[in-house]
Length: 373
Image 1 (cartoon, one colour):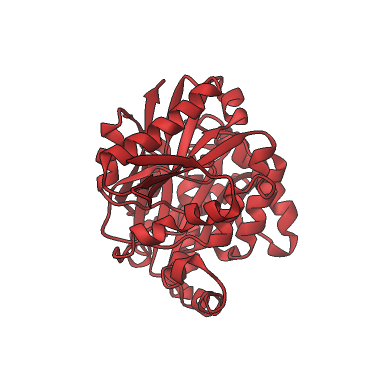
Image 2 (cartoon, helix red, strand yellow):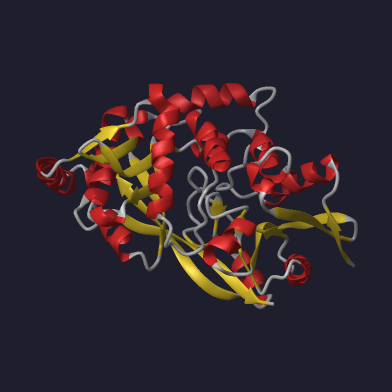
């Protein structure tokens, strides 16, 4: 017998967060999420998302054994901005049992329906500004920082529950050795040409981080506003995210483009902290995980470029490719061997072309699913 239980206590929330550690116990590519970070996302009085929207977590038990979880989401800001009545689901985990998956997804759908939802989309782990998508291609390597991971059988679990493909998200892989050849040399010439028209690139100023973050937020919300499923971050949400990123951000991988001193674009990269987290048992920093984290940060060999935006009037000038190229160029002296650029919408031809200009390979694919209610 399968029982679905709403998460209402701290003990249940801890069980919700910890479930993947048991499901993926024998998967060498699994990277545990930090417990405190997951707790933050899922606790209404800790995360600013809950000031405008709501969510409900559920646990699935089969014969008194915890076998699955899901979060049903009602994002009021998303629906208002996109003029839809859409619910989402996220944090989906399940044993390889279609009945368990069906029960979880049906429960999330019923919760969304009660909110007035016409359809349900996912997996989205709170918002599209967090992690989203189901891994459907590229299971041979661990996920990069702030990217999702799941076993291949999840594809059938979701499809067999009546969900349809909505959109694919791309992740590209580029080695510094490959990118540092002809492509980066050509991008240097392109950057010189941009400079002659008043467009310059620079690293962000970490000493003025808060002001830099405010400028980037403005560009981000304007540059991404036509992307599928996009919802502008509130000031609180952006500050919350920026505060978390500040702990791992490196100015070498955070590049902005300016036209006559005004910000017109940016690219944000972070060291791939998952190289360290994969060694931290069950995502706990205490008592010894904190030392692994502190020492491991100095040995990271890969970077993830997780965010890039250029204002509409300055696109198709090569700024996007130059931003990518500058990050790769800066990474080489630090011993970085490769970077992931993710995620890009499958139909965002301009951005996909920009990353392909530095000889990046499409190596992973994620998918969002949709179901009418």
